[in-house]
Length: 589
Image (cartoon, rainbow, N blue to C red; front, top):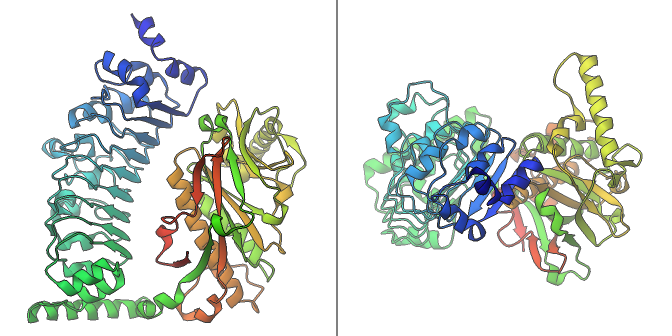
């Protein structure tokens, strides 16, 4: 019986045999087998402890995860279970334990009417979890609950996922926001750093929200808020107290204040916040007095912090400029083809061309390379989420192919080294890492040596190959000496790859372009001061801004990623890309 069950899941047998880190099971193809197994995930899945990414979406037969999922898959960082028929009880058994590495959880489109206990649902509150207990999802960054039937959220979510950065709730039946999402003041005091200290993106469009509570201002990192198409009649003045709010969508609500509604329809976030800060229309004297007191308090704090009160006045002038050149306007657009074999190795790639950088003066090139290293450490989470590669465009021979090759076939000329086979390079790096450990008498190693484990268990390695058959990039390890950036480089070819998700690639690329734009302007503004080694020189402060220097924006050229038949897979930047950095970057499309 057990043998028959195992034979019914050849995908799992292959994953175990090949020691895979990623597994995607198409819902339509496995629905019959899931139904035959009682509507739950197969037990053989629990025998894949190396699994880091699991997707099973669009399977109407999937009603429960089955017990032990969390304990069996401790390395899981991405779990996508969208468009199934999972309920809170069906999720409870599988998620009833800590997933310490989980960063992305997608439960959209499951018809959930309540959150499972593991995500702070009602039953979690009844269980009276002891103070100081470890959170179930300590690394969770993104939670997608869109397209369900949720009417309320439990306050336990703040405790279960303290590092949450994006919470997607669109298409539910929520009546109030934040509503029960925020714990009561007494309980909130017990949450280190306060509830949701890192939550920057909150989406709750297409619900039944009638009240947007003033406690929304408790979220200190909130940058993007979407409550479009709800039942709001007014907006709280406390919105103006959200210190980082830059993008807000209130369209599709029947607001009583018609002047405010006009601003909303024009997507004028700054104007909306200024209007609310000033008391808006129809406010009483007492409310206006309170608004004035809050304004004075803010101004006082801004002066204390070093003059940040000037920020609003120079915000528009301080924005960096980039211009997008569309494929249709480009006489020779660059194209990247993707081979079918890449989907089982490192499937996601986003590319673009960036023209007009200036790396000649002083330490501009050094600051550029340092910034790239810092992005790898921070937003790329030590290259575990994504890897950046930057090339001198003049040295790139198009068209390009994103392909896979066996370790003993793939040859690359790494930065600062001679041409070598990939398997020999990794062996060389491993020996160097061991030598480092012995010399420094410590466990940690530096440089490329930290990323070797990312290729463990891979039968094929990803690579970007140019028209001459030369490997110019070997993610996540290195790119090639052939396309190395130098001081006289003016135009860049940028690539971001990931084995996690396409959106992560786009978010990293957005941030990379912003950082290069900041560095470019810093170089212009400090062109006579060429001796500083301080990486903070790359950052721009309001006091040094001169809008006239933005007259020549950098040019971002769209790059198409297509399959071998020429069908479009990704176009970057699209109309919706670069939105994550829109508060600092003006994009001319």
